[in-house]
Amino acid sequence: MKKCSSRFAALAVAAISLSNLVAFAEDSGNPEVISGTWCDLDYEIRDHVLTVSGEGEIFTDVWFADYDLPEWDVYSEDIYEIVLEEGITGTGDYTFSHYPNLEKITIPSSFTVLAPYVFYDDPKLTEINGLEHIQEFNFHCLSGTAYIQEHEFVILDDVLYYAEGTNFTVPEGVTEIRPFAFGNCTDYDFIDIEILNPEAEPEDQIWNPILQEYEIILPDSVQKIDAFAFAHCATMTNIQIPDSVTEIGEYAFYNCVNLENLTLPESVESLGEGVFFNCKSLENITVLNPEMQFQKYAFGTCIDWEAPYQICLWYDPDREWNQRLFKNLYAQNPLIFDYMSAALSVEFLGAETYDSIMQNIKTSNFHADQLQRKGILTGYVDSTAQDFAEENNLVFHALDQESYQAGDADLNGSVDILDVVFMNRVVVGVESCTPEQLQYADMDGSGRIELTDSMAVLRKIVGLD
Image 1 (cartoon, one colour):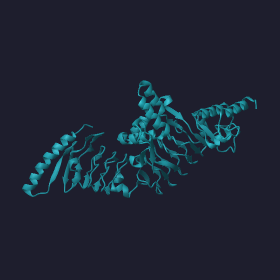
Image 2: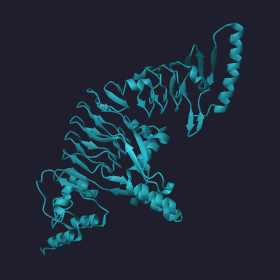
Image 3: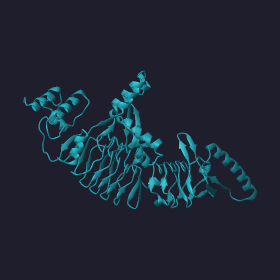
Image 4: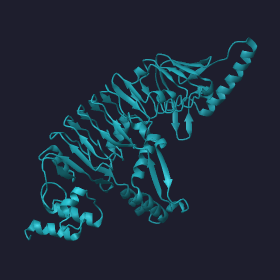
């Protein structure tokens, strides 16, 4: 859509209109009325009520510090109520944000999408009429409003569209979690960066992210978790998938970097593409349905931030201070990169709908050495989980096998050369092992994995022991 006017032009028009209207009010004794046209839409401000009429979308263009907002924005402090008449189909980003006295808005049936930050930081907004017409809630569209303080969840016809706050026990009766419903949980309000050595030079400082961590509890009524439903939810450390869930959509838990262990009940029939992509803290998934269908990147695939950084150093090897800064940050807390990436994507890429974000991720060409695979997939022998683990170089843990042989370091049910490779990777520090893996890999009982252990397994494989 075309840009309607610049912010400067809007201010100039408003100033001229205001001076004329003040003179008119003084001469006639009538109350002040402000009116005009923005993007072929008519607007009027009368008695602190803004009314917008016409056909189409209220256009805005916001990019970093460049704001192109409607002409009436200069009167935001004097607007207490907004009425959008039938025919208004939507808005751009930030259209009605930072209205300090806005208390009420009426939305027509033609208006179906809340743009990112559309009511952001409207502290007195308590009444939203027509919310049932909204089909898509974007990032932080209700953040900073009195409405969301009173309603932590937006639930329409048993579908959860929007969640924000600290109480994440989803009410009974919800059957579906819509895209990005919990995406608002990645926000600077949820994180504090502690500098452990503030006296050091900037490139040598060590940062420590402190997250408020929450468990999200879903009711037994939930049947479907849509694509991107929990994407970027950095504060979530634990979630229990109820037995009622049958489908989990693409990238549903994308970049939930603090999510830990997870069990998928027998009711789950399929996992979409990239469901747990870049969930770096998720070390184990237990799959109880032996025939559950996996799509690519469903589990165990993470972005290796060190690889692209090393490529940058290869192009510009003289940036030694950057190298020291990177080593301090990444080596001591690698999840900070993932959190910052998620926060920035919400803040600056949030203007895109989940459809276009999904398309961007799908079409991104990750270089092979920018991805790493890790994790344990627990399931039944001869199940789809075992097949997926073997195809994606993941450790498989058999549910229906009571114990493993000594030397089965990767817990795949057999002692073979893969166990030797895994143990050697642990020895040189490029792989980590769980306590259970250590139990079967520690051949000499020293309490750790050493080269002597991998040699003992190798001897066992070739029949020397």
